[in-house]
Image (cartoon, rainbow, N blue to C red; front, side):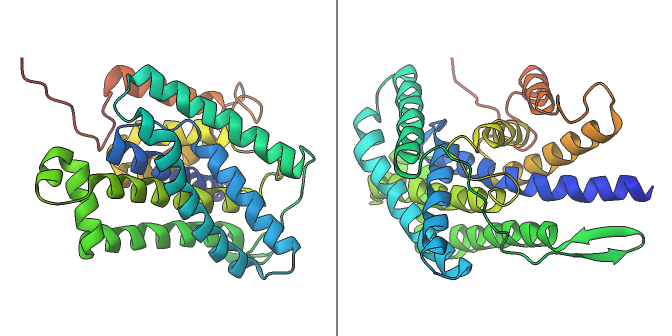
Length: 293
């Protein structure tokens, strides 16, 4: 039982990272209807920026704060320059544009910082709390705390601020929001900036666990897609719940299913995506799309 609880806790720590990137995917989809395949690369690029600030002598948390500001501005710039020209284009065109953005950001990171693997120190102290025979590492607790704080701030933004209410109106019905005087184009840019900021948090959290290099977010993006699909692409709460479930499922499968082990764990999120699409395409918390004949 103790070993099971230990695996469960580790799964929640990994799931929190997946949840943060899934949340970024959901935010963009909720406001624009676009599935951003470049979300992981944007998070990776922001992580490199944070690493560069730390290398330059800035304390980690100061570097993170500055990086989040840059990520927000970068997300808004991408929406304005790259995505707005294809806002009303066919879905296939938009998919190709996000894939092109994926390649561009990846190549730019490799050109600027090279593809050499870099080590990133953890912002959380080493060691763990011991309770009932289970070790609660400070890293896991820190990751869960950061993701909980992000969720809390997003809730306050959407629930109690004028900007958040406008974003909710646009997400619900863009045309009605436009008729009400809301500048929809500005809200869409804010949505991209907010998603880029949340994604940057995911990259910074995962970098100390992996190694920092331009391809580090490829696997994490698959888990994030599984989390968003499981929770529902139009539900921020579902993205977080889905991320935690995916993290726990992956960890337990790797520990207790011999055929999976550590090498085939990547198959778990793929299986989750397949099952959800077959059984409940809108996800656990998503709303089914109803079209009038």
